[in-house]
Length: 238
Image (cartoon, rainbow, N blue to C red; front, side):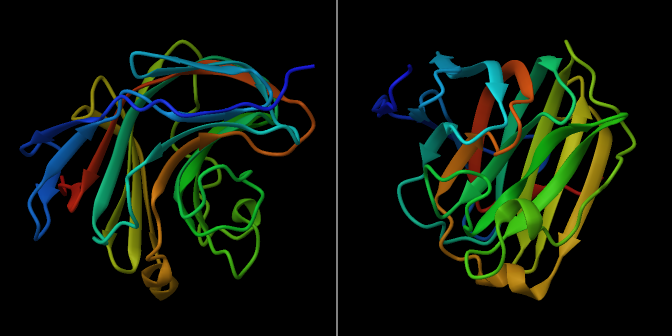
């Protein structure tokens, strides 16, 4: 039996000044953080990390937590921010999912009520798609309380393919998710926006989490790499 492990990797993230081609600066300028290490709570023993690359091997939807997390250091003061990363799934069983959220809770199951903004990759036969998620700690659980869901997106998630992901809070009441091909400035494959005044109340977000969800042991495998965190930056309109 794999014992629960709570590990902390203290290698500092690398900050870079400047604005990437797909970003526009907010009022406070643009600071990019290259996230090269993560805190880990992986009771399931299905996640590993090396040089900033997260690898999931047969990560299941079940009650055993599997989570990699980056602590931004404090509650996010700006209501314009972006997380970007590259996702490649090598295997994805029916009903499997992987959640990517900015949350007020570091090591909570996706199904636990929490303030959070993000999205998931999800396979629901016969479709695979992206789904936006906005959750509230005083409402329902994250998995059931999203304000808007894409349902079937314009693309089907293929295994062995790099997807370049951005999700952002672009205004006090609005979040946007984008999935691209080729690079972070490549062709937009899927894009959607959630607008609701309640989003402004999510002012205690702090942790960038990559985590599993409760379910019935449906498994997926894959990698996340090139994780970047931008506070006070939003994607440019194209």
